[in-house]
Length: 76
Image (cartoon, rainbow, N blue to C red; front, top):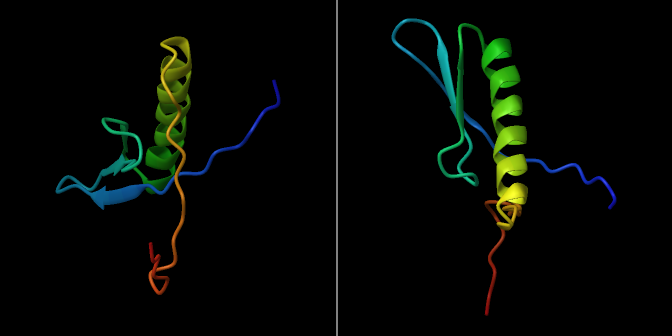
């Protein structure tokens, strides 16, 4: 099996205490936290890897994010 590198959009919010919370809209329930931006990003990378590993072990499909430019219109 070839190894593919997946990329996901993450949303980062600064908490009232100065720390950060990061979520992955394409991976429901996948989130991470950190005291710094760097720590939060490292933790979300680990969370994404864990999410994908569990999905594979359960035989569930791995969500793939498709980027669409905000100026692009898809017609049917």
